[in-house]
Length: 299
Length: 286
Image 1 (cartoon, each protein chain N blue to C red):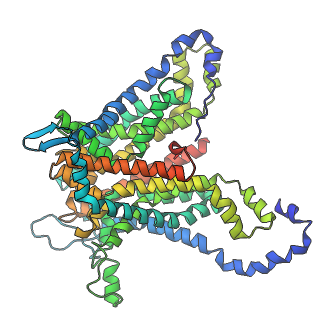
Image 2 (image 1 turned 180 degrees about the horizontal axis):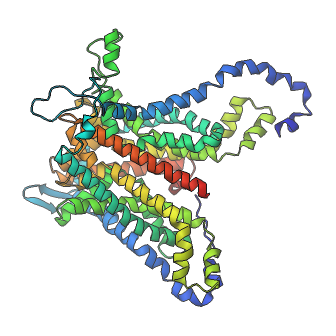
C-alpha cells in the first residue's frame, strides 16, 4: 500500500490552531513508539551485546566482544541451519502450489461468498497452533485414526510410521503456515480487473494463455509477499520439529530454544538468533532485488 | 460485454461450442479442490472437538491422558473442566495477559495509528520501519531478544514480562488496523463538527472516535487473539509462569489430558462466534 498522505484539512479549516497541532502527532505517537523502542529496539541491541559475551550461567556473563562466538555457533550448528533453510524452501514451494489455486478460485469465482470462504480458511486460527500441532501428532500417531486404520486393513506394514520423520515436520509446518500463504495471494488476485482477462480472451488468448500472460504476472506481488510470509516463520519454527519430529529432524529454532531456555548458554543462543535474522534479512533483500521490486515494506 | 466485442467475428464462433463438452467435468475440479482444502485446514479442529468427548481408560492414580483411538462417548471432561489446577492457572494467565495486553496495545496502537494516518511528522518513516520490522521479525528472534534484554537487566521473568512482551508485539497490528480505518475517514467530518462549534476534544469524542470504533474494536480483538495464540514469545518470556499454549506444549512429553481438548473446543467456539458476530455487524453497517 502506498501511503496516501491526505491534505490536513482541519489545518486549512482552522489555521489559528496550526501551532498547537504541530505537536499533536508526537504526543499521539510517543507512547507506542517508546514502548517499541524499549521492548523491541533495545532488546535487539541487548541480544547483539549478549552474543559477544563470555562466561557461564553460574558465574555470570561478561562483555568480551568475542566475535568467535558467531563462528563457533555456526561451525557447531551448520547442519541445523542448512536443514532449516531446506525445510523452509520445501514448505514454501508446497504451500504456494497448494494455496494458489484456492486463492485464485475464491478471488475469481467466490462471488458473494468470498468472505465466507475466507472465514472458513481462517477458522484454524481460533485454536492455538500448538494445540493444532498436537492434534496432528495425534492424527498421525503410529496406531491413531489414520495409520491405525490403514494398518488394520493391511494397506500399511505394522512398522510404518510418520511421526519422527522429516515428512511429518514439513507437513506440519506447511499446514501451520498455509493461511499466511493464501491471504496475500488472495489479496493480489482479488484486485485483478476481470475485464483484463476478458480482453485477453477476446484477443484470442486461450484460457491457459490468458492465465499465464495476464493473471499470473499481475499476481506476482502477492506471490512475493506469500513467499516472505511463509518462509520467514518456516525457517525459525521449532514447535513442529519438536512435536512431530524426532531426533533426526532438529532445526535451528530447536537449538536456539534449548540453548537459551534449557542450557542457559545465552551467548551462543543469541549469536544463533542473530545469524538467523541476518540470513532472513539478506535473503529478503536479495529476493526483492531479483524480483526487481525495492518496495519490500509493502509486503 | 464480450458478446458485443466478439459479434463481428462470427466465423470463429463454433470453436467455443466444440470445447464445451470438455469443460463439463473439469469445471468441478477447482471447486472440489477448494472444498477439500478447507476440510484439510479444519481437520484438526474436528479431531479436537471429537476427541474432547472421548473416554480414556486406565491411568492408575495419574491424571487421564487422551487416547489416540476412539473408546466411547463422554461429557466427563466438560464436567471436570477445572480439575487440573496447573492447567486452570495457565488458562487464567492466558486470559489475563490477553485482556490486559490487548487493552494496552489498543490504547497505544490507536494513538499511533491516528498519528500515522493524519499527520506528516519527523520520524514518521522511522516509525513505519519499526512497525514493519516488529511485524516481520521471526518470533524466535523477538523471543530471544526479549529474553536477552530481561537477562541483561536481571529482571526475573513472569507475568509482568509476559504483559510487556505481548503488548509489544500487538502494538504494530493494532496500529495497522486503526490506521487503515482512519485513512478511510473524511477529515472534513471533523472539520465540519468544529465549524459547527465543537471544540477539538468534543469533535474527537463525538465524531472521530465513533467513526474509528470498528477499527479500534477489530484491533483489540486481533491483539487478544494474537496474545491467546502466542507460544514462542511466551515461552521465552514467561519464566516460571505458564500460559495455556506453553502448558500444553510441556504436557506433550507425558501425554495431553483430555481437558485441554475440552478447553480448546470452548475457546474455538467462542472465538468463531465473536468473529462471526463482529463480521456480521461490520457487514450491516457497511
